[in-house]
Figure 1 (tube, rainbow, N blue to C red):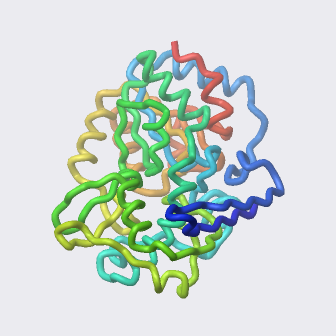
Figure 2 (figure 1 turned 135 degrees about the vertical axis):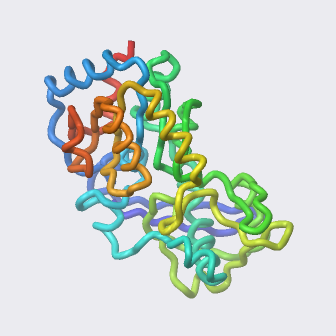
Figure 3 (figure 1 turned 120 degrees about the vertical axis):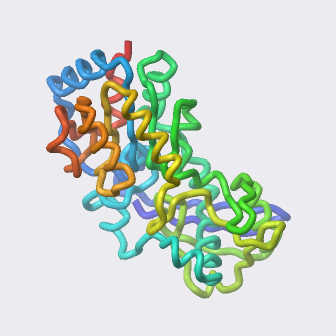
Length: 311
């Protein structure tokens, strides 16, 4: 699908026009091909979940592709496969006001769509597992807040959340929606047409469009940054220690929608292996830990998880 949306000022408020041209269903736009569901594999996952009493689930970008958010690495449909664009680097964002201006201009345009995306059946299934006492803890590598929207509470957002913004100087946090209003007030006549969407809500703009975009600062004068871990940054050590403790308290680990290529998530698999926990992986395509798993399933998260009885 080719998505294009235009953000423009109209009668004192901002409007988003979205034009979509689909060669196939939008649900499958960012989901790589997968084989039909295997009844035996479903039974194996059901047995795994039934035997689990303190289940820890770790999710990655693959759980959100069915909500319309692309991942980075999937063959043919991931961001790296479809474009030559790379995610923003932490050091570049800190060093350059121009980089921050470009980032925020793109994020401003992409935010209305990104923030409106909703949980899919996989998110709702995990929330239900928690409600019924099956899920002990949920760790997500995603920054899209879809688990929160689905009602998950026993949750650690390993890489932060795009719905929060923090000041790099004083540390004050504000909701991303509040910053959107400030952007609108500073740029009442600015308009831009954007193409594509990244996992962090970023879109594609020309340098000419970016040049006139005005970016607000914190009340203290410091620069603002999404409360997320950019590439090249590290996860807060206290958060890492917290998740390690949850893994050690668990009796099994289920990975959902992650290739585990990034060490920030992979390290918890190593902890689970040291504790001799059974590991199951639900992900379309190979992962870094396939050889450590007692069960590997190549299926859509939103298609398979709702079939599992958590009781």
